Length: 205
Length: 205
Image 1 (cartoon, chains in turn purple, green):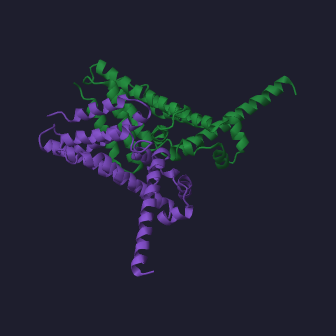
Image 2 (cartoon, rainbow over the protein chains, first blue to last red):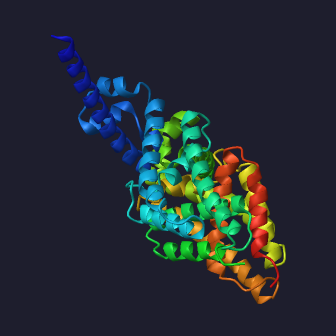
């Protein structure tokens, strides 16, 4: 084969590999949202998707790498569904309300079949130190940081009364996690609760 | 053997059975707090404790019965550690503060090695309808009900400003669950956060 043809074959393989990787990760995230990241294994995913175990192993190496890749894939999906849509809204109280609204939508018509990926997995991995836990915690910190930043914008602009942004972000995140559980249990009053609690923080001074 | 001797043998067996049952349940709760109730199986517990699988099976029957018995055993231990000690305190704000203090102690020097039993298992079982989930949810409802009842006492006695007891109980429970995760992750600021948040609800009108 010519060098060009060689390169084309390699490109084809890379494309195929990337596509298979995405398919596997999409399924891995679904499984992990329902049964936890610990329910993942290279063999199980291979069986579920009708792939060879050695093929899945070539793409991910170890179970831990697969778990981390699934956590990152869930984070990307979350960012696209919850965070990106609000980036055009004005910063401060308006953007915070939009974030909460997107989050509720994310938990109500779940992006992942088991509901919030972090609610399901942080509770499981909080007692298991390691790279998987670190990946999950990083996402939680970024998310709380986003909420705190909008709260700070809102107080600085005089939109809302002065408050401790870190403390309130911790509280709002806690309430969203509890609402995710309530929604899974069929308790539809959770959305109204979230809205009333968040509005409680956003009243003008 | 005489009837009396017969009865004595039966009694002995019942006592031994009850003791073995307690031993198994204590271990089951520990395993479930770390790996989730789904990590439990009759065979696994038998192996861990050096018992015969058929013996464990005789005592519990099915995996689901074992899971429900473990949830009930965790609830009894929780009641003894967190609720009973506060029953002598005056009702209202004082008892609520005492409840939160006991709860923090429960999460800090964990009664169960994986931290809060319900934080670990509700997140896992919220998407799995059935008797195990129902047992977990019942406990959460009783716990939130306790918090709401003390809040109502406190408002009725004029100790604290008027508030929506159900909504605030939902919020306090959510914050305690988040603090449990934070404590597992080594974030010691969580206790201070909980105290500040709870005190925020207890200010006089």
